[in-house]
Amino acid sequence: MTPYWNATTFRTGGVTSMSLYRFFVMIACGMALQVLPAMAGPVEALLPGEWYEVPNSNVSAINPCPANNCNYSGAPGQKSVILAWSGGAYDTKRDRLILWGGGHGDYGGNEIYGFDVNTLKWIMLTKPSTNIADGEVYPDGRPSSRHTYGGLLYLANVDKLWASNGSVWENGGCSTGTWMYDFSASPPESGWARQTDYPGDAKCGAVSAYDPATGLVWFNGKAGLQTFNPANMSSPWVQRNQEGSVPLYMSGAIDVKRQKLVMIGGGYAFIHDISQSGTVARQNLAALGATEIESANAPGLAYDPVSDRIVAWNGGASIYTLNMDTLVWERRAPASSNTVTPPQVTAAGGTFGRFQYMPFYNAFIAVNATSENVYIYRLSAGTGSPPPQRPGKPTVTVR
Image (cartoon, rainbow, N blue to C red; front, side, top):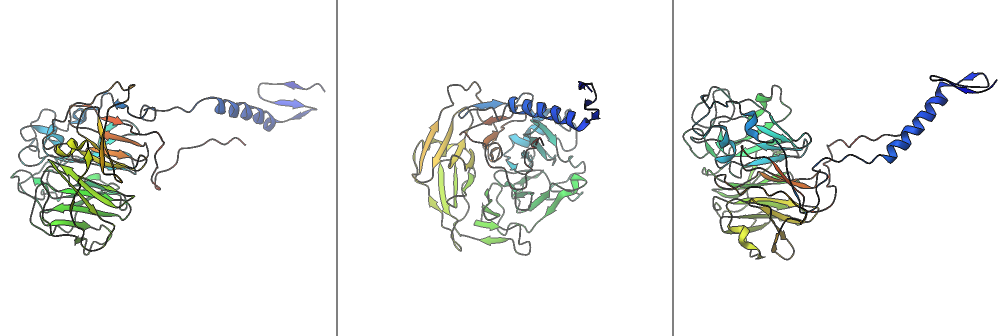
């Protein structure tokens, strides 16, 4: 019998073999998959030294009270989530920049915002409380809105947002309140839980940094440097020095490789060796080079493990890198291929934690106003290092 092709079967010698037909089709598909290049998004396509402005990424587009006539609106309204001395954090598990702020007489809304880097869209993670009152806690049990300064972090070891101190709605009193938010809570508004309060006098603005190597929060409030251990809820706070509070407009970051805590801002610069147990002394950084970044008010500050640098930003297209072996700051202009320049910082107090390193993307994310777009920057080549809990990208295997 003469072999012939059919649209649905392949016959040879009188034997029908759909599986053989599928085999040839899969071989053809497999060859096509190998020929076609992998699709890269705008973040992945960034070259070292380039910025990307995410189109239509104003958080004001999801304002819960655009008419500014809600009981929690305050005078300036939602823009004070960023404008009024408030910071941010980066959720490394879900790749989201987190915003939570407001407070004093500026804004009473306590909703949480997240910018999803995978979709390049803002989402409102919780709705604002509608029954509000002066002080630490609203009647629904959630924390009041506040200026968060440098007291907002994401703790990867427990997958929670962490906040301490700040200036609360509406009286502006300085808080010792410490809270954590569980991203897996249902409904989302139930995720807040108050922790053991900061064991010192209240200070509205404080400096904090999370160490992923140990799971500890390093926090400098009015009572000096302390650590907060989310794995020891019976006694989370430990005093690490008695040197008192740092100036108000400072930012902190941890060099995980060398176990050094760096704080800069407002004309001051400190370094701490956090590898040692017991007392951790504060020392002047005494860096050389482009030290003008140390005079910026609460600049963005983060550690980049790929380039092995502390990285600082204070608006515009240039960034600053600190070599932790030589303690020399370098001002890095954007690449010649760069076409984007972020605006200068207009938020009160500075950037705080709204400039963050994204491990999965090996890039930085920044935002400084609800009416401005989100900006993303790449310092060095490389694919970054996804956290262990992040699922890998799907692969296709042809058998």
